[in-house]
Length: 378
Image (cartoon, rainbow, N blue to C red; front, side):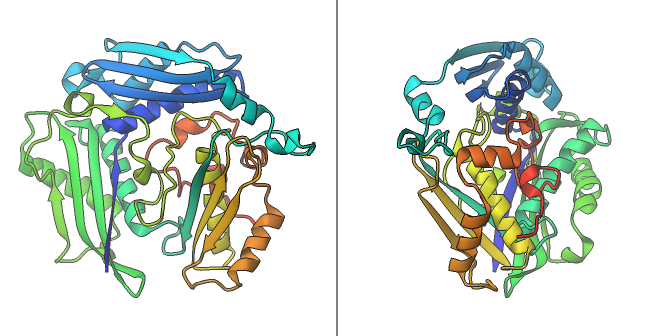
């Protein structure tokens, strides 16, 4: 069996938009931890457009944040596809809908007399969390390696190891399994934006030596591993100049690389009252700890919510036959140990802190410094 996952660099036009949206969110949270933020970013040729809803006591210069984020990614010259200093920035932001705020400010439970459940979910939706013990990050191998390759592309560019690289790039890894155990890498695909005067053969050799060999364990490579490095032969035009970007178009890259399900909601640009972000983080935390506590070798959890209602409508678990306890008992542990209301999740994971720029690139999961990746005894 073979399974493939992809990742992208922070200069990919969609990821650039995610980073801008999360940069705006962080700036508002720095000034007002109770900020309600839901912003989308569009990037096109020489232009950034920010829209959405923000309710906050903070006073943020959104245009300044946008320009700084673009420059941080590495778009500082129009030849690269965008220049953060000179690009056109348009902002069209309004306050959060009063109809939505009604359900967030006061949950249905509190309206019915439950004083301990104040805030409701900011939207309806289904959220999934997943974990597997096949890597030390408790993530599927293909997506972890794809992220590491993409991150390494950025490192060798910013550290001037391969100074001819430009910000845009994509990676893809195909893992071969035997009886649910990864045994080798079947295929690696890397497309890296570059300056026009670099020879393709030189780029291929540099990417192999400085990126692939730096990331992929040698024992997983063999003579049959297929390598496709810049398979079109040329990748000079990239970023928003080559393709428009939009917040939320890389949700499979953000989660489990297609190995597990995704509920449908994007993460970036949304504060934690939006359960499609916060509940996805909590579902990942619970799934990871079920595996880390050896209650199962693999675990997928679904949480579902109704707008304005605090407690989840349902909790579903699937351990794919690897559970050490009956699944219904694991669900009881979850219900008894964790407060899965929006307020409970926000407090438990400290989600009012300005941490979101650190989540945007190379996956929202598998980074041990993030609060939903910590391991606790359950």
